[in-house]
Length: 88
Length: 416
Image 1 (cartoon, rainbow over the protein chains, first blue to last red):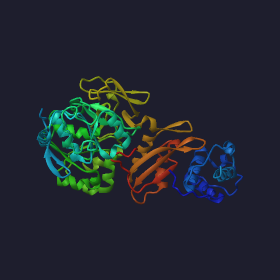
Image 2 (image 1 turned 180 degrees about the vertical axis):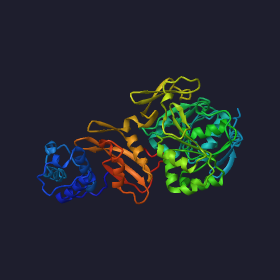
Image 3 (image 1 turned 135 degrees about the vertical axis):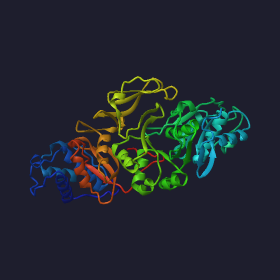
């Protein structure tokens, strides 16, 4: 279970975590948030890993029933979604 | 009837005894016939061994379990099934020796019947019926050994050590209390232990925490059981004890002891499958599940028993990877065996213990998560690279947590 910390996470913090996930697999997160996920090799498994890292950081599970989940195609989509899911 | 091992030496919580002495004491204390149907909730090995002495002397129907394993709900279930709880309902064991029918629930008892509580790793613990005969799986001449018994009283593994000592002369037993487990090598050295049976978690923890003290013991027999056995722990034990016989046993309360492997390798030869040999269990694989037909099975479990254990055949060996209902992790439609991932991580020479589970993963259903105990200085990145070099992408743990110590339950297992 994630630690009982119940914190909020900022967009920049999610960005740092995303950079870590990509770095684990030999990729670099570009500065431009409009970059397409397919161009940087960020796949469903990577998204799942990032979501877990966010959950571990905030100490609770995110609600992934949001319909936007299947329409993420850019770095900005990922960052915005994970920040927004904290309040879902 | 006096068992063959009646005069074997017992060291119970530090005090010497024998099976014959335990049975004699029970016989002298007994006021009448068999004491109904007893559930002995033992607060230690001494109480549990004394209960075996009573069973030897009177044949009293009995279930033995560590008191800590039996919660209030289970106690109520036992009472409803006609068991008198010792000591809850009757006081000390000696006071439970009333004439037949004197038990609190008035159950006359079935002479010779023994009950085992399953470990409960798959849900609620359940009672499985045995007798001393069905529990005794080793006979004939054996080299003289002094066994350390670290198992929780009343478990199938505990009964294996107990019945070996009852049935075979020269098989002595030294017990170790749960709160003294961390220092068992010292106790073993003091009492001349030459053989130890424990779970892989037990061995892994000892190698990690007390490797030097362990290596100094004159062990001739090392036995592993109760959990899936991986090659890494076998190799470490072999490196520590080059001359010892190292065995792993596949057993469960339901099918009994079904597989014994002594070649130092994980799994068993694929040639053992679908083989009919007198006196040996028949082993088969059906839809990835181990199926056992055993002469040592519990009453009512005759015939082919689906074990619920998942197997994979790799390089001519049948590897038992874990429970079927928990071993499979579905990562975006790719089936990953938690046991196989665990085995790869344990192959890292600085990794001491691993638990692999499926964590909820958006988009892919589940992702692989690992909790790991490793030597100081090992990093998550290093372990991730190790796994990525050896596993398919979906099987590489996406979350790795480094723990400070190996978590071990009273059953010596760690739910891996």
